[in-house]
Image (tube, rainbow, N blue to C red; front, side, top):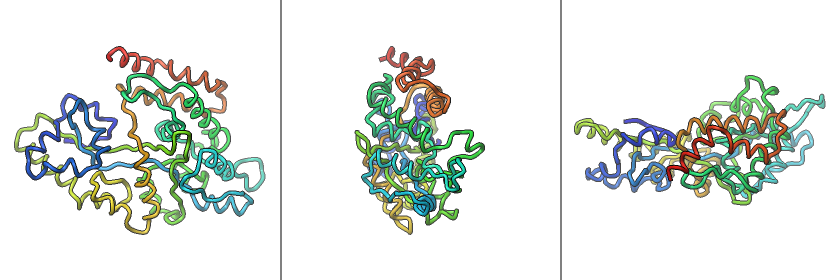
Length: 347
């Protein structure tokens, strides 16, 4: 038995038990799956079998350091806090206004945004109407006008409102946001627990992903519980009891209260909104309706590394490739070409 991330599900295709079938044999657990988020349950289904049950998860939003905002306004920036329906153009304009050289020495003191990795940029890709692959994950799809717009926007953010690696040596996102080096970043609910222990505990704002041509779409990731199909009856019963415990309302509500994750149990969601952070936490729950699961590819780690390399190149000031050339190079990357040509051949 193990708790896994959704991207690890493929590692258990041959060994995981069908939990929906096993739990239906126990009167005390038969109704358990139906008490969980149906979209979260669906990502752990493979070939009709419920190989895992969702435990908790989180989606991505925009965090704004209010101190950075106030400092920019005090130094003449014409910027206002956006509405929940803000657009990509408004987001870019705000990031530009928050990028400031306060002492006028020619060096940027505060940047508008910490550049997200490709995984954290997925909300923007989807909101522009693009996708990395077809819904079945068999064909590479990051091409065409929507992909061009999404990649072009990424380059614009890197060039105009974000520090390059040389400007933030040995600085990572959380510290950059906390110290005010960057005003905004893309992150999930788990970031709240970190900020709650800092001087920004009451000085940050949470905003939804800005609207693009396809609306406001964000990425959600879930952790799930998986159980071996080869457990002897006594151990299987113990595992079933542990599953019942982890997905019970008291445990799920406790997960919700920490603010680190959204509980998979629907009846425990109310605990996520309670407390002094209810306004910020509500943004995560509201964004669930526009959340998509992170895509699963065969040989995911290879595709992940390839995407990381190419997105790093796209934000490199020394990259001279056009967006069209970059998209073509990404599609032809040996790791991506091999994975998706294999998938196409298997179809």
